[in-house]
Amino acid sequence: MPAKAKEFAAAATLPSPGDSAGIGASIRGLTHSYGELATIDNLDLEVPAHGVLGLVGPSGCGKSTLLELISGLQVPAKGNIALGESTSAAARLARCAFMPQRDLLLPWLTAIDNAALALRNRGVRRAQARRQAGLLFERFGLAGFERAKPAELSGGMRQRVAFLRTLMAGKPVMALDEPFASLDAITRGEMQEWLARALEADPRTVVLVTHDVEEALYLCDRVAVLSARPARIVDELSAPSPRAPDRDEAITDPEFVAARERALHALREGTL
Image 1 (cartoon, rainbow, N blue to C red):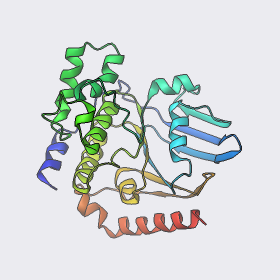
Image 2: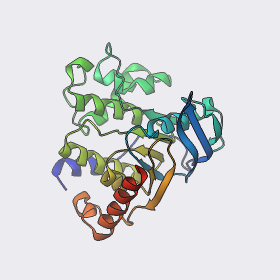
Image 3: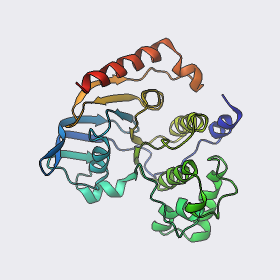
Image 4: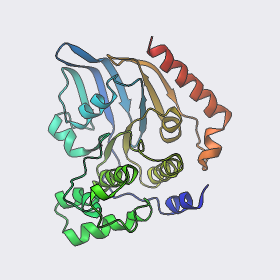
């Protein structure tokens, strides 16, 4: 494991959601469309409390829409979504932190104030919110850029600030849409290791969208492979367990390689 990744692992802590029992996510008969464009077709998914579910599928198949529906940012045309006992869109939104593909940083705020925004929205005083967010800046490779505006940051750094902002929300459920997409390969691997250990130390329920099958199998307990639009499940597989502590060792394990090949085969089948 690289030295930087070891530093992440040694301090793998997240802001607590204040719900040690956790809550799960349940999706039943979910169907959605934009006008006549069908995006999701009669989908059933279950994520146990503190479970981590990965969603992979071809571009445009409805993965991001599914996260928005889970998070309460959209209302489904048909079917039911529950986060624990929360079924309404407003109640789901209160329990879920959503990270979209675009970083959506506020251009007039500094990096540290963008990262601390969720804390400020919860009533935490600015100085305290900055201190709490600042504790993670070095671990995220952002030390020295606390006062930089988004326009002064690289795309990868902006993505890290956005990811940190999502973590600082301290919600029991996280919906992550390609959280590491803008990072270089080395940093992406380090952040994957950090998140894996952070979720071991402070579990919460996560739904992760990614185009990277390896990332899904490394970070998630289960992976659902979606078809081309309208999205339906073409395969669902469990990630190899127990996960090797070192990412390089984990992704070269024969069981992991076999699971990756199965997922890639399902992806190809789902586009036909």
